[in-house]
Length: 403
Image 1 (cartoon, one colour):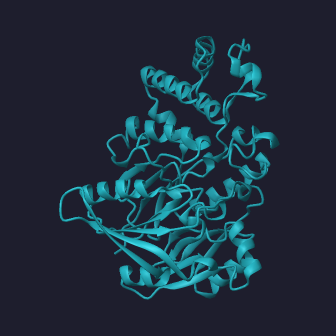
Image 2 (cartoon, rainbow, N blue to C red):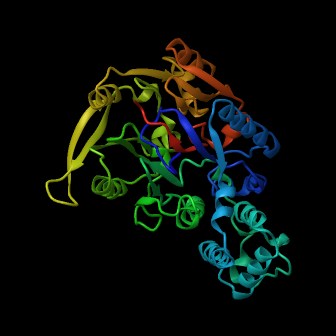
Image 3 (cartoon, one colour):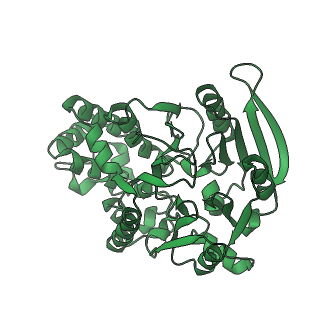
């Protein structure tokens, strides 16, 4: 099996990256929900049960699941690399007091690597750091319980990096609360024995933000990317130039979305569920502003064509087949909005016509089945509180090639 191989949204899934929710969810508090991009506080024990159910469904259908924390541990495989990671984590967490920095280093070095990684994800509480005292002005004036922030969005592994073909886009996250998440991907793709030689199509140090929920790999030549609340147009131009230079990609389809939380990523309103079928929020079935981006006549340049097309017309043309759109929640406006908010449009396709979906979206799931799509339902009363579905919670590493 190749380390990375993703040339389709629907080809049989063989290996996928997940992150099982951890203590970072218990470190959410009502005071800081908005800052950490949550609307509610999931119950960790139940969220873990639901996530384990998700993992087991994947295993039962022949998908190998690997976990983010395990890959990071396997990457920090020498004392020097581990120390490099600790120093970078402290720097990116904006801990500036030298005494506090030293206490964090000693704290991390006193535990095994996996425990250390879990502490970086969960956030370091002031009360849990041995010998912590208020030393900086920030410590004194801010009523905040953490020295380093928790990362509760980590179980949405789709966003911080995205596998495209046989390479990776190591993303720059739009919101400050999520930017440190990509440090784990940086070390995986720098030091992990299996992934350290991976081609990079984007860097977390690039200027503009791009997130994996906006990236759909439709074929070995076509990539669709949402211009969204969290993916900037300049980032799409940057990654397009790299993909045209280093791969056989022929066209990037940039799809302009409203810049709001309910459609924060392309995959919150559109996911592919079969070779010729897409699940879509009904508000996006009409004409949209879309941009076809091709290689320019000179190296490093682009040709762009602005269109006012429906998704059906755009994808039918580029995929060379008749496309069926399945509306999330059906044609009822109330049901459509409610089920889209519950991630009804966010399905993970594990083979053509077989998808993992949240059981809560009953209308959408009935419509999928009516179109011949097999729905593998998972519970989501807690997982859905973070505003993401099965596709958001998974990063495919290997899919079979479509014959």
